[in-house]
Image 1: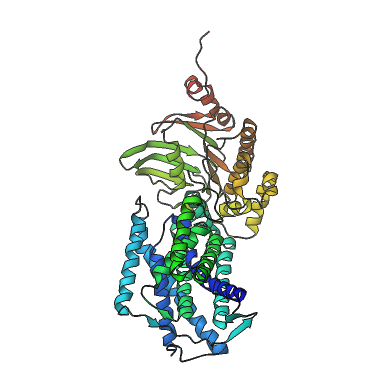
Image 2: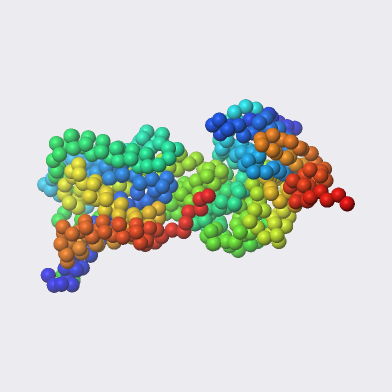
Length: 309
Length: 245
């Protein structure tokens, strides 16, 4: 491979990885935007999502990479798995909010955030026990087809990941920008008290934010599994921290910022691994996290100061 | 719901924040054509009155009645839906939403349809400036423009009663007059106004009746003209000293 082909190849890989981080970062940003809460349980919702997808795909009789589907059956199986995963993950997020965070809503200080760490550990350990801490082979029904464009290899798998991620992000954007509930969500994020005075049910909006964010985390978990061909109890930790960095980098609370941050972090990870060393990727990413917090806390896309009195 | 009942009544209303007793047996009553002004100093219970009307504070004793129904436990959303809309202190627009989206939020409890369009037309007619700025982010407007949007946002709820918290606060004297003129116009269109206002002079000029609140009790009540002529009021709220000649 020539130098430029390697560079472009790493861009392709970085965008795929970045799509996962972006989907995951959206959940952090939605919840933070509304509750000013960093939801560490999000890490584990992502991981559980990967396992839900794994179970659904196995239920279709898919084991490892042995069964390859084509055409309509492939699309149908992936779509069903995606929908089930998103609904289950969304429901998990809603339950976490309803039973562990809502009771903490009016407690001042970091208690709610610490609660999310606790929930994250519970889910982490439950899956650890259920899987004997083993990495599980993730079913991959996708044909190994790939396309060569100017020396760069783009796999069919990657194209599917891009399409699904782009569709989910466009969908979320339309939801937040255009729908009545999406507007209520933005209103609550900007001034919860004023939104309540307009007749908005703030608890309901919080629930929707958790559902949407967690459903996207589930989708990200499924994509992660398909991309790396495994799922393990620990996958939420690394991906979650990177996605959190992406959310901060883009401007936490800012929806387009989370998407941009995700892609940037994905690119930094692949390009950093290529040109510096893979073991330095985390050092670079977390230096960016700290650098953003110190020098540009509002992130790349920033936000006007919230209108709070 | 009774049509002959007063629009809004406070009947011996008490409220508490924890151990703190704020409203101590307060009575107000207003009809569907009234402009009422509530005067009072700091910590008199003005803001708590507004919150009690909007349902974010629940009385610990006494009754709040709206069109004859006790609404002590009715949610804020339920109140907005039944025609009580707020203009909040310091306007509190959604700064990163457009003017149009802010108006949409005002109509949050209403169905989208012909009525929404009619309400929107009415707001645009009342405030041509708001129509011009409808695509702009609310946070970029001047204070006066924001107040217009805030009043327009309240009108989008099809209210019978608008609760205004300090509508003249932070506005230039010219705009204060504009805002009070608008309040009168809206009132003539059939919307009752209950307002808390520091600018007692202007407020008493357009109000029908006034109440004076002091540490949670109504200490004076009566027609606005009478209050405006009352020496104690003139001294306390109209910035006049008694200089006997």
